[in-house]
Image (cartoon, rainbow, N blue to C red):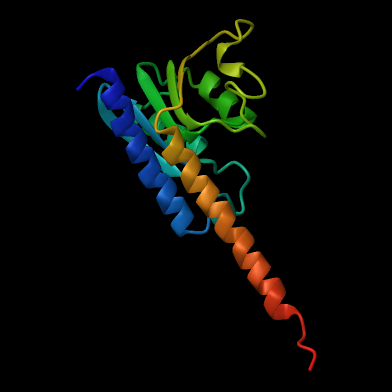
Length: 167
């Protein structure tokens, strides 16, 4: 399996995690961390479930990977995440020294890898990452689009049902 095929394989696993989040009513974002061709962490968003702002998929995966390796330095790992990381997650990626990040869809409202800022490639920091964007981008973006479309439809239906009928 070449690197492109591996990236797609692991991103599919991240998409499986994103689906777990969607099934819980969470924003469907999933993350996988791979060390020497072995998955050492899997996680998905749990912010609504935990009512904790920091339970993003990436942060949870980083915590699990640190435990798996017994170190806060996640050298020789690759993080796969379905959506471009936000500023909080980009900071954690830098702090944990993850050398390679692969993401699916861009986040034009909060993405800090390519969209709003380029935190993972800013030479002012003491660590930089190799970044690969757009792996299974259509699928990664599609699960988010479907999730938010369904939410809007449910809200619209509730409003419609709440309007009193006039005879």
